[in-house]
Length: 73
Image (cartoon, rainbow, N blue to C red; front, side):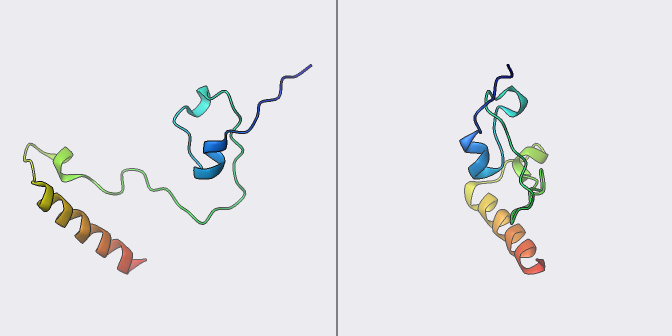
């Protein structure tokens, strides 16, 4: 008799699960979504090079990135 797994409640809410295939629950793919995921779309400047930006500079960089993307969409 096949064992049926319950649906992953976190995956149902967010469309992602940190356990991926190792999750003990099932991940049912949605037929459509209002959200798209673009991995690595924002490149954090502090992870790009040896220079470290202050918190304020980093926030300014992110705000500029967000504004550019938001106005283009």
